[in-house]
Image (tube, rainbow, N blue to C red; front, side):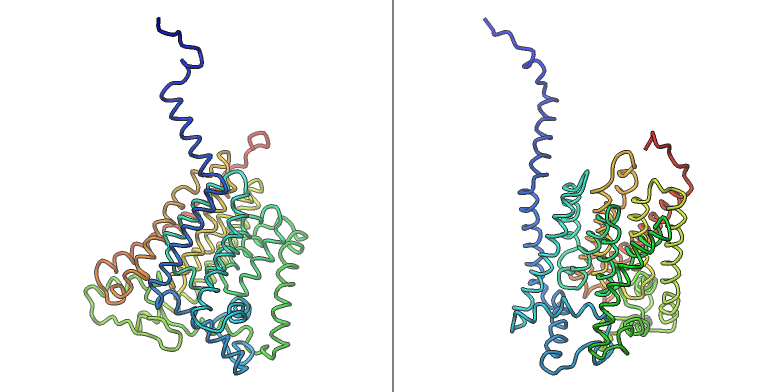
Length: 438
């Protein structure tokens, strides 16, 4: 006689079994051991690629080492003795590897280890965020792998974790977020986007003073005090003048019409600037675009901040979303309206997406707001690696495929910026939901 199946046997359908397998897989992938294995594999691959493309990826790191060792050996320091392309705070991370090494390869290894440790700290904070921090870790690692090794060989590899942590703690500890953003901005300007978002969304003058002005002023006072103590008071703000003297870099979004036109117009020339080590588009038209971008960038930053201010006052129930959207828009504006288009800048736009995935909920429409931007950001990262370092020679030479990749990447950056601004406007004009609906 066949055994009579129990009610539990009858309930175990193929569909239920499949759901059980899926839940088990998600549980395993969401565990810390799985996340750290993925972290190790991702960073191991990125470091390997950094050595494969050593000249392109670690060239700036070698320059960092030269600046610091020249300061130690000849007492000739950036900012303290001459104007510099970076803010004074950038000297601190550059000096750390030099204090514990004596050779260039050792400096490279310590630099990459330092960036990896900084990112590990950010992953810990990201993975603990609720409700979807661990899913956000997978996005973050995928983004970094797609971008390739460029971020680990630049200061931006340290800035991205700072931006990410600042955005993750902004809602609960805005003063700490402002402190982190100001520290990052004194290394390189990009984290200032988070500071602008915090300033624009402060709910009152008291909150603005406590959470924005005081932390930002305290950090800045320390940095400027160090500059005065070392005799660098005349150069501490010269970084802005250094940027103003630059021309239109060939990878910049604003250079796209010229790089595309090179396909049929041989009169458009790209030349190497031996002073700042970049390739720039030459000609009166490119110069005019560069000068226009000098004006457009600060104007765009102010307009986005004003939009955040308006949205935060119209929708105080969605301030957390407004901070993330505003920071994303500001960071994208720093790229789209920048006459410098270095590939490592793309590392800035991953943190707002990762933070939104980690902190968002279905009730807030996170999937609707951030799914396409997340997908677009991954594509932008992958196209950026295709340009640099994989096809950089072809891109500089005006080859059709590499030129098309660059143009598509820049078009997607513009689309992401427009999308962030449109979503901010939608939040601002939408009717506030009732407390019960919230």
